[in-house]
Image (cartoon, rainbow, N blue to C red; front, side, top):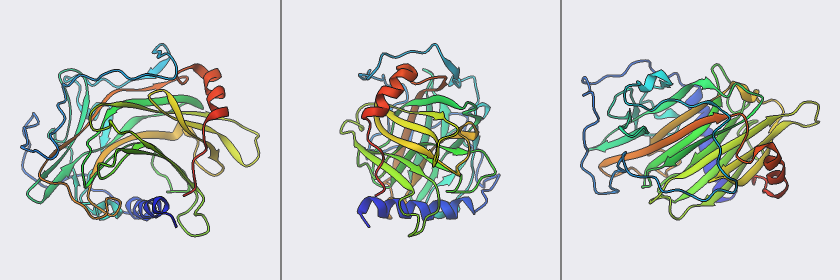
Length: 319
């Protein structure tokens, strides 16, 4: 198996264990302060939540007139208004080191309207946040996207992805990874998972790796367009992954997966574990900064743009 597939296989085994392990609804610890305190770090320096986001060139002109869901990241709005905190320190099937907690130290809104998930490594203790949207995609076709400034460092695994709402079976019901990167490699892994993780189903996982050399220094917009299509043999619709408005991967929606309208957003920063090769982050804080998270009725460029992109976009590789 290739190195990429080995990573996917490890990730798959991790997910099987993760989704068979119940998460706790509470967490031990001292009461937390209402504002996130500064955490000393020089590897890497934590991203400032108030930093400006430089613009990026899009394949199509941007538009905002068909947004049907956009959560408010105003400081007056609790994070829990739009997201459920998934709680636990059980390794998440991947031997991860973080304790996901619902502390304002680890997930908060900034004065300039951004959502921050802050992973904190401090003297062998690791805390982070894992958020699941209350809102589902709720449409047979549409587009979901976010502008993301990720932390890039060894032992850090940030992600923006979608799963079916509970209850569900993984990977049978499907998983779509819109953004994920680990160990500071400045590579985005666009992924589609379904079927089972075994030697017979090794090809039921698609991935395209996109190198983003400036990932450490500027944000990028990651998006996914979906369209359910009935009456077509062997598949149920189509997906296209985008980075900064440019299509980077396409794939058919496999038979047997859940309908796309049942999927919801997940945002998290994992620390350590098998996917990171056992590496742990140094002391410090590592911020996943999210802005302009939205669900739209159509992708940038409209559905005619989707059809043009479908003709020239590569399909994900099985390994």
